Image (tube, rainbow, N blue to C red; front, side, top):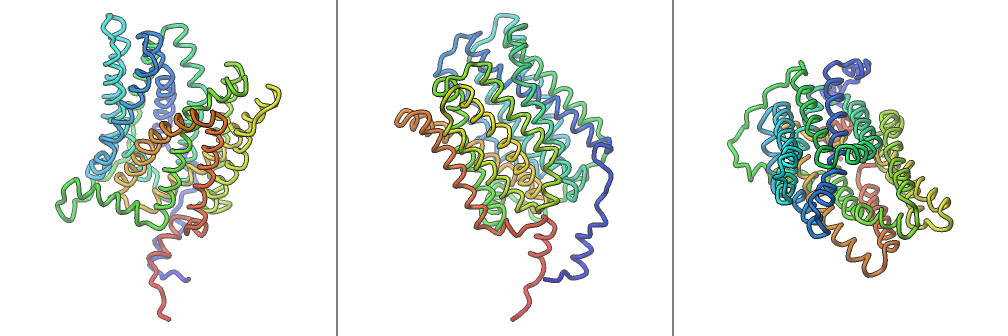
Length: 439
């Protein structure tokens, strides 16, 4: 297929900058703020349940309701957030959600200090924070292309993925140290302050964000939400990615709910070894983020997504098969964390970059929100409930095996889609735009 002159000019590689994004001052501000913010969020992810458990004496029902409160926020606001984001400049949305979340989290240590902290307040904080996070998570991937250009999103997402990896490596240990030294409520102060740093870094960005284009036809927000859903359902590339994401979260929840129990009770690892194994995932993710751009450039973005998913699945089978002496069992779960998480990070960078490159800017917020809601808001909670039920029926090891099998099977939706033929988002857009010659 030969591109016409207009398309060839539109997607010309000559427009791509060769200067590293590490030398892009505004990108560095974004990266720094997000690295600090994500580190703080990992601290809260660890510390908030400990506030309920250790400070307020909560039991399993209260902890479960804490999770439900967060999921309810994602479900309630997620799709609406995407439509709002597509009507507004994205950077102010990011700044204000950071500011409000900072104020929200500052309340926990303050309430604890004055003796006014109650479990109901934690439910409210979890719910409101999830609502604000839905706004942020819809705006953030939509903002990045406007800052660095769509032709550099793979490099940008690779570098931004290092933020999450650094947080996953250092966050749990920092949280444990803060809880031990200062108590769980005061550990959350770190996350509140990290949101302040993130907001300041966003305010300091000098690159002008263009005003949102006027809507051609006045539409109700319900129509805009429906448009985002239709795109996700009908797009030849986006739909299989969405199905893979949903199933990945459903079956990934088996690990989220049962993994610690499996390692501690089935494989008899001690808490120290459990921490080592989990930290290996952060190390693997960091390495994966450093090589994501190279993998995409070498293999093409579609094949990269598929091969990384297959590789992670192959090494992942060691987890349900782990047995024997503690040293052997530890190695068998350590390798999937180290290697598998690295490969999954490359897959994730490829997926988000592909979505950013394929979806028009005017609906990108809605599409991101749709993927967020169906995966995190619906898929993960549903998977968690099913995982607990199956573990009661066939045991924890059997449930972990089903989780692995479900995630592996979800790759088939990618393999049978057009994704293996997608070298770059630009080439796929060009292919879609080129008229098919008459027979």
